[in-house]
Length: 292
Image 1 (cartoon, rainbow, N blue to C red):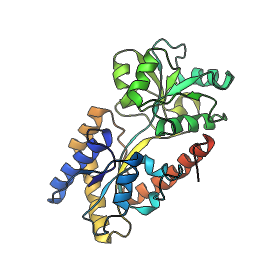
Image 2: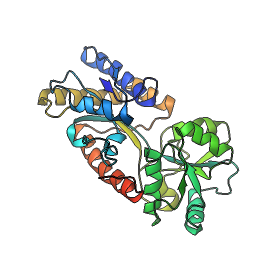
Image 3: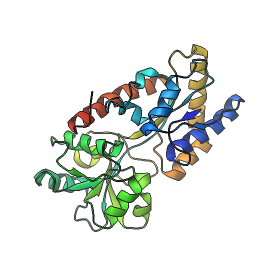
Image 4: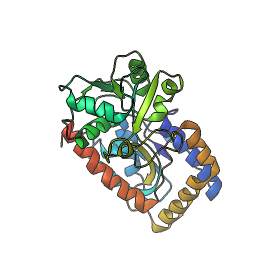
């Protein structure tokens, strides 16, 4: 089981618990191997290029619907056999605890009334998934993708620290990543860009609930293999991953970390990626980040 991201991160943690539970379910060893580099290109390409025998699979992430738009690889979601979507962490919109904006509609109204560049936001590097979440939200409100100035950061943790220090107006990282500052009473989350509320954070409304904007995004993770996997492999893995997701052990794992509990079978995962590729591509074009 190949992982395109480093050991110790969220994607690595998800893959390792999935591998443990698959081993129990199928009675075969599943070994996780981290293949990092190239902003995720190296590991994603290795999964796509693996022999189509079912013995080398991996975890693919939302970046596979971003990297090709940036001209970093020719590999797209079409270069895989989808097997199961295992979770999705939608972005939240977080403000400093002392922010004058008590709900996301107040913030949105202030952004609409502001001059371009007045508001500052962060959550990840330039062109990362949380930058695109902001661009997509602004687009859904009829604003240009750069109406809010993006301040690149080395991830959600430093962005949340900057928010707590009043260096930003808001962040658009996932709620689990913001949790430390939320629990410390230094920030609050106004909404999530998801079709329904997060089970781990039931008090945070969706964008649609809070302001009538039906826009969703997220950093998702799913299991896939190279193209041309035998039908028997696909059906076996499809069923086994469904059982893994339904298991109490996996639910406890996701809930303990605040990860979004979202699942789709093999066919549903394929449909999810096709939609994500379009929406992320549109966001990247709007933000001037697409090169193809």
